[in-house]
Length: 84
Image (tube, rainbow, N blue to C red; front, side):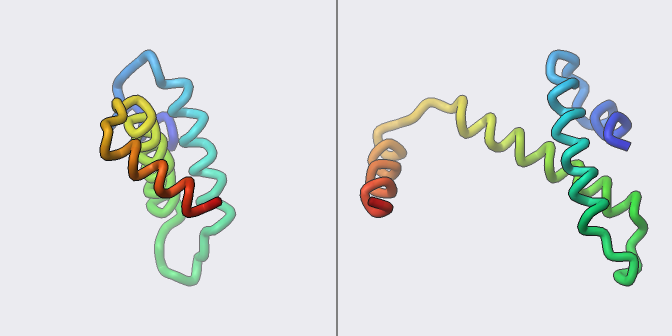
């Protein structure tokens, strides 16, 4: 299931191993949290969880690789000071 989703939506060959790892974690979470009483098939639920895990990774990587501007740096500093 994980490989199928990755091949269908994320064709970049350079990062497929990472996506398989993250997708497998999403699959494990799906199996742990699946409730058959809700009327949803396991494959449907698991596919959505795998996609969410991959999308979360992508969002995190974009946030980490985007350059910080002055506004975001000030916002981060305020957040850190508030936590202290």
